[in-house]
Length: 346
Image (cartoon, rainbow, N blue to C red; front, side, top):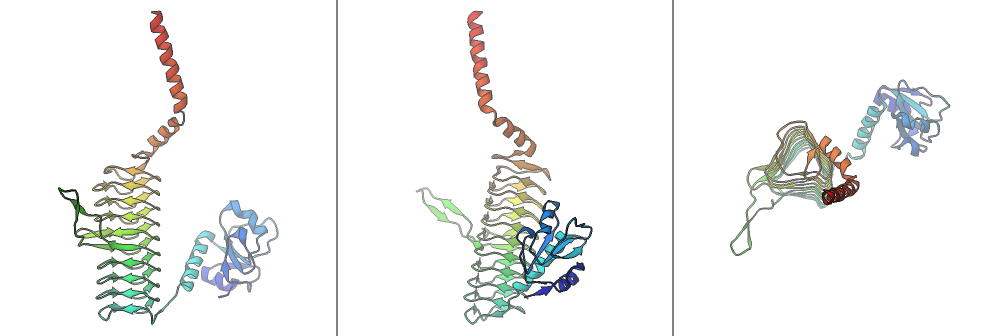
């Protein structure tokens, strides 16, 4: 699909400088531009690329001042970065605007489906499921019995929703997400074997949540495992049964949260961090990558790192000292020898 510089400028409320009929049909980084590409310049470090880019159109800040001739057509806007983000959202919406139910999909006759549904090949919708308006369900998605999916939510290929899973509005679940598998609940018996504890709860995902590829969230033993509004989960995360993640928290890849642990609002968790079970984490807590969180945190808006965690400043100081541990050990050994010699002389 092609657009002219004028059409793009109208969408962004910008001003064209150059050829108003310059055509673009894709986007590219400014340093990798080519004919028909649209780029943007926001970071001053990349300014030199604008004089050599092959992109047909470049979005720039209103106050950008050129110091040499520029081949590309410019679109001047108040904030080039924000405008480009808006354009990418528009482009994504255009390319992902799928509708219709494939003849190779299955929908139970007791399921309720809203308007403008997209249901891809070999997707399955179980009994008494409820699907809102403008929902997109890509091929090979499984929606179990009694599941609820809110308006404008997208489930990419291979998503699996076990029974009674609830997903809010405007959510995005990437390929391979599994919601509602049994929590890891087993009771050890005197003879050494384990009896399975039935997991009869569900998973609830509130509005505006995005969940990365191959992330798994277990159903609760009772009640709900809950991810609150606005949470962003990266790929390969595991949330165990009865966990709770507060509003607008963000967890990076390979984070593991053990059962019945509650993260507060606006928490940020670096990749490969792990939480023990049955603890509470205060609002605004931040953890660096590979943090090991062994207990509850009561004070809000604190930063931590390390395994087990330390306050960030303390961790950085300790880590800096650790790099000199060999030198310190040699000095200590030399001092011990001096003390031994002094004792011998006394």
